[in-house]
Image 1 (cartoon, rainbow, N blue to C red):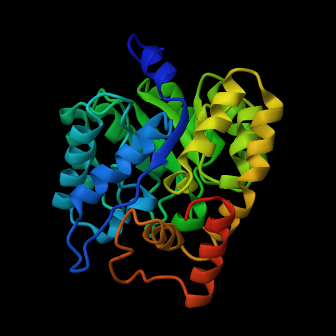
Image 2: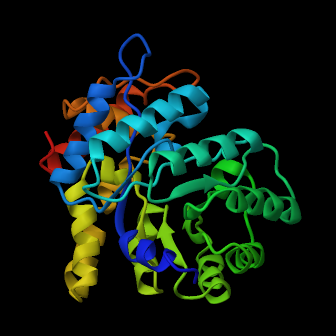
Image 3: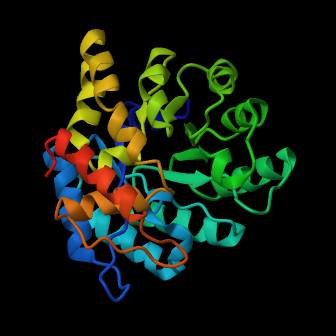
Length: 302
């Protein structure tokens, strides 16, 4: 490992919350709301902050807005925990631009999604990520989410990238194929940072050597998500497993519609934000909203 990345890899562990992007009723970004959400995370033990990933509705933001959100989050965090914004896009040049911006502002890492819609082949994927990684020194976390991109980066491609690009330090696997995830660790090495992006796999991924999770549920219940990782780190496997099952009902209800719609509905009910999504996204049905409300009551969130 190139000098400098080992230290970063020690920091980027535990619960990384992918903070949603709050909007005002008129659709403008609510920067005061964003600051409040970040403070909520830090007050409840979250280990690292991310923005403008899937939960942050990046495809509904302009490039300028994404930079503004990253800069505002960086200022709000003020070095209290690591910061790893999402800088990936369907567009290669935009990905390069945003990743360089993250580096310039001093982010601890950048999370780069596998390009969606285009469906490049594995060699093209390798070339895309290697070009981005070679252009910066900032650590890169690959974001592999086949359910959104209609494309899976293979363990072989990931291994090539981890071998050829020292600053590609890990992957967020929003991948229900647990066999694939095991092969990623086997091929990339057990020091490769593996984060679960599937809520019901957060605990199982820790069991195979994972570094943590990047879970949308942490937006709503940050303390329990962070505590699960803390319990694991101190060797209290029973407590970590208990929290895994305690979170399951909340995980389930928050993914009965497309993320982040249920999360925003929940945060609205909790009085954290105005529950606004930009079109073409929309709020969950009234029936699901009532189910979310009842679930929040059982968790003591209302």
